[in-house]
Image (cartoon, rainbow, N blue to C red; front, side):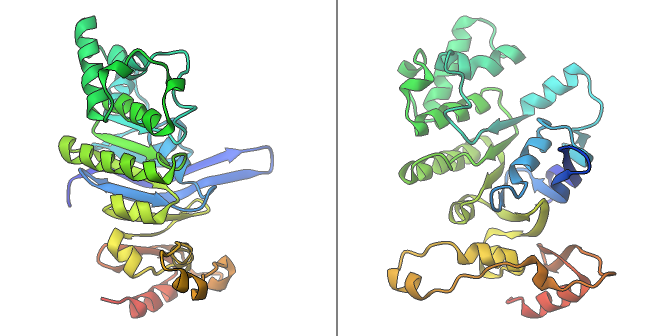
Length: 311
């Protein structure tokens, strides 16, 4: 993969909650997303993964760093026209399908909001044809167009949210924990729909979640965040087979297994950030342990990780 769609360089998002307190929600995160891939971003609640997504799409103005989309700086000074063009190419699917849909709007108006803003339909007939097509694309039907959000289940509402994101024909979609509020039986349906749409439309995803098993299923590569830092980044298979950072190991050890006997005897790993025992002068940065596998560590740890890595 060589065609970079998105480049995040030293992204920082700090919130001042009153002197002298400063919350470093995202603190110097860097990664690339290639055209047509899904990058999963995982970590515990409060680690900064959702803030990263919101900063990328400019729901928050970044404290520092760069977000380059197709080579253009997202957070640079932009005219209203430039922002409108950017907003069409980058869309977001939100975590809560109940709160993210306006209860006073019909489904057709919710989906067509982007179509109206960007002038993508020449008349009302074409507008409704686009809405019907989008409903069909996400597994709903045109009879749903005149209903209101409260008439739908959580899974159906999330499909409406996906249709709304697709309405402006974006290149890149940030999915911010799109399945966490759904029943387990519905989660797989929504993820399979997203994979199908990606194949058909050539979409690129940033898939934010805390469910590592589902992230592995949908992602090409996975980044692990801990307290505002990206601590590991690798292909999905490599991250699961060769977790290097102790925090990644602790996350993977917490995934329940379907075998009760194995679960009963399995030991979970806890992560203590003090266990690293860094010296005062040790520089911490993302270092390449193996091709495409990066870990946030010191030079001393890099040598240890390389020795432990299973080829």
